[in-house]
Image (cartoon, rainbow, N blue to C red; front, side, top):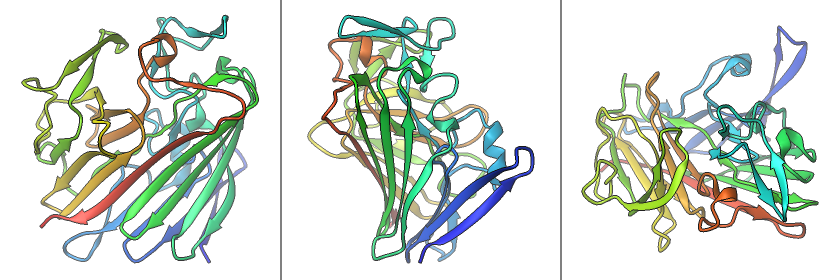
Length: 317
């Protein structure tokens, strides 16, 4: 059986739930608040476990977090321009600051309490969570039912987002874990390789212009492995659609490497200034609801949204 842990918030008299699942390679801790990945413990070359995500030891700290640490971001991850979008000739207005809507709004999915639906510690351990987003929550149309499954398959974590709606809506979900795959004080010497031949040109407010730029001979060229360096990234990369593998990052300190696979068309790579960590946000293009040449972001009744990402861990040779 999976191990169930319950924590109580001292400030709100609210029961906060934590689930731990594990196999011989990985131990995963998940919270019902924000469907957060709190810890992801992976065995390094010395046989000891390294927590490969940035987070807090005490679950209640996430209530005050402003970085979406480990959380599900939605209903639409990334930025939407003009404070909203038009769908089927109807305008929908979203929460915005200076005309920009970010990560689902003022209270996105990262700040919601999810329902733990299933927990299994079978051959492939998993935990499944659900959330029901009501019509016009944060301005989005449709009653949306979302499921997230975190599943351990040998040395890999599968993150499966699924959703259905009763009315046409837009959707773009991602997990917002900041990976830090060793105990060192920085990530500058991590070796990064991206299977992404293009990136989106962004305006100063980080909204896409609509132009898609080749990475070759630019600072965003990680087609061949190289150190991340001191430059901080907040870049929307376009995946090579001929392959599910989108990224690989490795640390020689821990001996851990991580490969990222996804069925999504874009990868936002984000390395914050305030603390060491790297996000691999597998998702659709930002502002796709307002950009007709970008991949479709509309979910219709009778359809199922499906976003699958795999984080596979290995030891550096």
